[in-house]
Amino acid sequence: MTTLQFTDHQSHAGRLRNRAEECRTLAEIVGNDASRLCYIQLAEAYERLAEHEDVMPSHARIEDVLGTQLQPEPQRSIRR
Figure 1 (cartoon, rainbow, N blue to C red):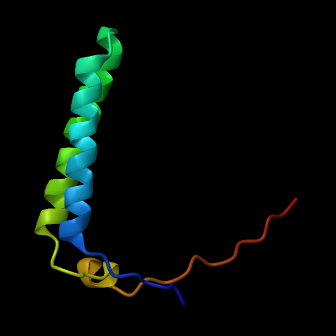
Figure 2: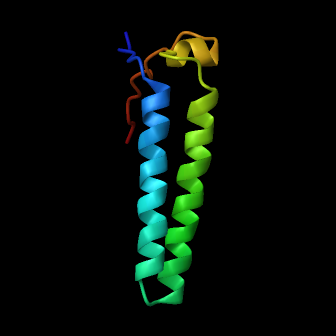
């Protein structure tokens, strides 16, 4: 059986926003335009992830979100 963990989505969203802010700060510091663009894109991605966390119910379990029971992957044998 798969072990499921509860997540405090609001706290996780806050941590993601902090990372986004760190990326924006790094984008201001680096001198290379390509690196600056990468940091800006990372910041935007962290913000999108945080937005998704905001809409998750508090302490939701993955099975509640998916609406299904998670099943472990079946063992597959390798034939040679």
